Amino acid sequence: MSPPPLTQSSPVSDPRRFKIPESVLVVIYTPALEVLLIRRADAPDFWQSVTGSKDALDESFEQTAVREVLEETGIDCRPGTPLAAGLRDWQLENVYHIYPHWRHRYASGVTRNTEHLFGLMVPAGTPVRLSPREHSAYQWLPYRQAAQACFSPSNAQACLLLSKLADAKESA
Image (cartoon, rainbow, N blue to C red):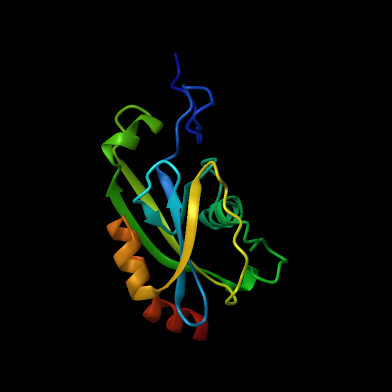
């Protein structure tokens, strides 16, 4: 018998389907380096940037980033939209151990995830529309404060790198 396919799962999906351990972290920020943080609906003290796993093994990290930003915030940075030019691949990855309480979402034996980092610069005042199933609140914070508020160490580090990465990538 072959193993089940590796695909993203949700609480109501087929229990034989699992999340792919390849994801994106998208730091959404303004030109003034204010960072959008969103609070997870299932963990009230868990503030984060946009994150999400690939839906298919052949989905690119950029496609995943665009899809997750739209799903989680309502911000549209798909190719051809005004915000598409603001999405930058930071060419950085984090590999981390998946928190034990979320390992059930992955195939048996999967304990590590590879997270690819992106930045998305948006104008100040960009409207945010959360997916209430996933997130319960949002806030814009200066990047240093955002780093302090992040639950995930890799997310905090990405916020702290923002000033260097935004300057370098925007001028490239």
